[in-house]
Amino acid sequence: MADILKIGLSALLAQQRAIAVASNNIANASTPGYSRQRVELTERAAQRIGNDFVGSGVTAALTRRIGDDVFVGFAEALDNLLADEQTGLNITLQTFVNAVQDVADDPSSTAARQVLLSEARNLASRFDTMDRRLNEIGNEVSARLVTTTTEINSLGAGIAEINRQIITSGVSSERPPPSDLLDQRDRLLERLAELVKVDTAEQRDGSLSVFIGSGQVLVLGTTAAQLEVMPATLDPSQPQIVLRGTNTNVNVTPFLTGGELGGTLDFSREMLGRARAELGRLAVGLTDTFNTAHRNGMNLQGQLGGDLFAVAGPLSFEAVTNTGSGALTVTIADVGELEPASYRLNYDGVSYSLFRADDGTAVATTGAGTLADPLVAEGLSIVVGGAPAAGDQFMIQPLNHVAGSVRVLVTNPAQIAAAAPIRTRAELSNSGDGTISAGEVANVADPNLLATTTIEFLTAATYSINGGAPVAYTPGADIVVNGARVQISGAPAAGDEFVIESNAGGIGDNRNALSLIDALGSGIFDSGNVSLHAAVGQLVTGVGAQTVETQNRRDAQKLLMDQTRDRLDSIRGVNLDEEAADLLRFEQLYQAAAQTMGVANTLFDSLLMALRR
Image (cartoon, rainbow, N blue to C red; front, side):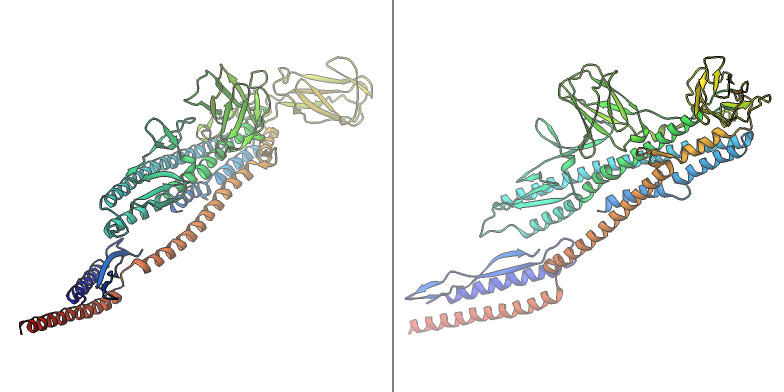
């Protein structure tokens, strides 16, 4: 007959295990990361009794387990910096333009000129403040990368250690992994998933392989890889994340996505670098435009205007892996064609190839890279000196560092060139009705610009310049002489004279101040289609729009994450009512199993008594 006592004992032990598991669930109902456990009961193999099979009891077979914020934070800080109504660049630039207008309204006013210099310094200071704040944000990004990669390394090592313990425990189909180890590993994985995109693959030995980003191995069996933040090969000021190997380090920065690490890298790539370049482009555009117009004027000292602002030029770096002696000289050739970007220049031994540093897009170039025939691309002129070797690379940063370098060169209010450098007049003795324009600068570099020039009409149809050869007269046509441009209209008579002379002493002249205002409001960027104010607006609006977009994406992802956690908790979480009901059920089954053993004992005693008779 079947072993009734063993059957009863198996039932007793199984229900005892079930009661213990239910009690453990209740005890850990508030334990973070605890997964509800459940005993799976399986039927023992049947015993053959004659021609039939009779069950041999039950076994408690196993205990089963049931189971973009960083980007937004940085983006909001950047948005607040650029869009602040009191200290933002737009309001500071407008205040500066207003000061230029005040000088145009009263060019002889020393007070107005002093205010203009003060606002110029304030504008330069605003560029510097923003640049320093962007540098601080960049340092925060670098620090965050270090702390995040350090934690990822720690989590990877923890997962590898749990893998070792699981393998040591002897996992098999009859011997599943200990639930507490699986819970610990899940908690580490959950935190890891908050830091970076994670994929996993469970192995037959119970270990879990962990891949981060776009498939980079972090944990393989009992071995965990190590990430390290190091200076970039092309630009030592920029951090890169490498996967440390025995003999070499592999740059995995472009492949790390998701979580806090991915968000930090995305912000650095998509917003911070571009914002610094945009701010630098604004600084270059302001400096170039204002200085060009200011040089065409005359100050109160009777001298031609010089540069009011100064700004640093482009930077270039040679890769530490270069084997040649090549070095770059990069200058800005055309502000209107500048793009807010950095570049990578490659040399293959024969020719050069230029790429955007952020996305690798190829950039068209002209020229050979020599002094006589420089490489020209997107407003830049690039001359390669020395002897580069095949495979050498260079980084070009035309704008990223520029904003903090803006400074004001003029300290004396009298040196503000509000007046035009030349003036014209018609001699009072003229008998015709010809008139001459006020004149403008055609070439400020002409050494004879301030020299006196006399235009004398030989006949009503011809004139000479400073006694030179006759020139046919066309009313209203440009007359360019000694770097000045004028037009004569009407019907001059023979003997009439018109004079172009220096405007020294013209303290009430505001023509160049008006030209300064016109220049600041004209098209500067994108081939002359975007003004300085419009470019500032585009920068602020672009950062604001991207910030809102990331906020919306964060909110959507948070909702999805909350839903996923709710579903997970509903599966693995402890339901006290359910556990209490299970306790009662297991208790009844335990009592029934005990009764089975009692019956078996009675039958056994009866059998013994029968044998004694």
